[in-house]
Amino acid sequence: MEETSALAQSIVRRLLMLFRYQHRFAHQVQRDWGISGRQLSALRYLVQDGPHSVSEISRYLYIGDGTTSPMLERMENAGLVERRRCSKDARRVLVEATEKGRRLIEEAPLGLFGQLRQSLPQLPAEELAMLDAALERLMDLAQLDESLLE
Image (cartoon, rainbow, N blue to C red):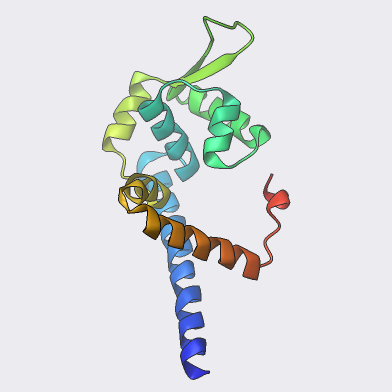
């Protein structure tokens, strides 16, 4: 029983460390670069993958379009991104990084989730499956209702 209690505490401590690191990183980015961590993630996505719609950016960040649109407007006002109509479908608006946004990405540090997005694909499939199962189990234990996140 003592061993399981210690392991359980270790798991919670490690999760809290991840959250704390992400929180501190976001504050540091805001202070040093004048951009939120979420904005930095969106900008990095646009620089690496090219122009995307608001909905595609929302899915990448796991947030709603209603949160993404005002964020992109702030980024556009700061000169980091620009919106333009798609040449193939004029109804579709694409967002792309400006030169100023590209320069910021070259200099800004990679955050926790950016680092994970880069390093996780390098792991063997078996290890990824184990990590995925463990995280799914933690979500079950926490009784997380994913529908509340949509």
